[in-house]
Length: 109
Length: 118
Image 1 (tube, each protein chain N blue to C red):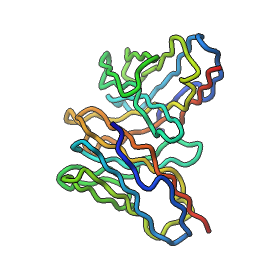
Image 2 (tube, rainbow over the protein chains, first blue to last red; image 1 turned 60 degrees about the vertical axis):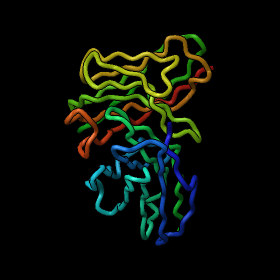
Image 3 (cartoon, chains in turn orange, blue; image 1 turned 90 degrees about the vertical axis):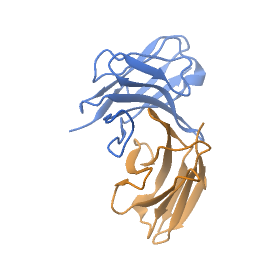
């Protein structure tokens, strides 16, 4: 079952902040975050593991609430290059990651 | 350069004409997977493979076949394509350490294959 992402879409002005949320109805081993620019492949942003370990890009921050099966991606001081569709991937079993429907983020000057 | 290569990138075909989308990775990854992307539905997993000769169904496997005869290749086969298989397809690969996804298991995606079935 796909995780739920919110909001579905958001428009920001440069310099504004945004939060993208991801929630799962199943217990999570880990949460993955990827960004896809129009016409391109998804690109890795971050993995958050149970127990607090994280791996990802320095300028991206995220949280993972294991008890609530929720994760949030924090985009601060947004830049034009942040535009794209953000996918969360929920690892609910040892061998697969199920992606959410995506959140479209547009940053305008 | 470490990469996942898919071919063809674009294909228009007709209902019932068998086709294969190839996927090859040069990173010696154990794990490979196929996803389809449709508007509003995100990335849905079709099939995945944890190693040579080991494959399993994802969430939307109907109408697709896969094989993993070599570690680097994971072709997606549409035996009798139908219009509802018109989609953007992505292949992805990952290292597979410790028997489960971990912080090391970043998925690397191919550039995508846009398939239209008339």
